[in-house]
Image (cartoon, rainbow, N blue to C red):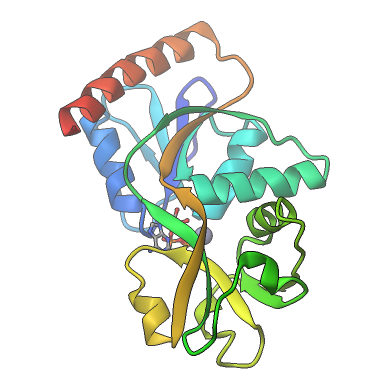
Length: 226
Ligand code: ATP
Ligand code: ZN
């Protein structure tokens, strides 16, 4: 199965915390499609739209490179990729069309629960395990503080116990995972939710019209939720 460029391409997370809500939202916008288990692409039955299912980490770059028209992704991942691409002098522009109100979480600093926390500044020079070194770096730099990056893209919360890091900076929603690993949340550095983004380059009129229709419906869906 392939996709042709005249159809609106929307990327969503294939399987993870944003997948169900993303699929549900598209349905609420009147996009009819059937997701087959391992398929990368689903063609909408009633509109010229193709839905691409990928890793959430890949969504920002696909939009920034203009390969995909729209994407649904966490602001945390979006901004981390933006900072990374800016640092690498790669295209990093996009338009944020609407925050979607699901996938809410916070990116927080956490330390072993038996340790005292004075301030983020007191972590200066310490090793911090995270999947978001750029968001963390920006936050700490604003406080005149630096850290040593221990980049982990999974199992971040075990790093202090494993002797790899002094602290972590990870996504939290309830705090249960931190607690289970003997850690305590000490400072929120970033609040995130899922957001709808569009590529920066202008769309051809037919695509723009379709996006306008979807955005009008989205306003309706979001205000009905309030
Ligand atoms: P993928 O296989 O697509 O890379 P992943 O494991 O990186 O998946 P998920 O754990 O599914 O990603 O999280 C996707 C997004 O969901 C996060 O980037 C964040 O925006 C949001 N999210 C909401 N609550 C949480 C939470 N408690 N922990 C982690 N992410 C959360
Ligand atoms: Zn991911």
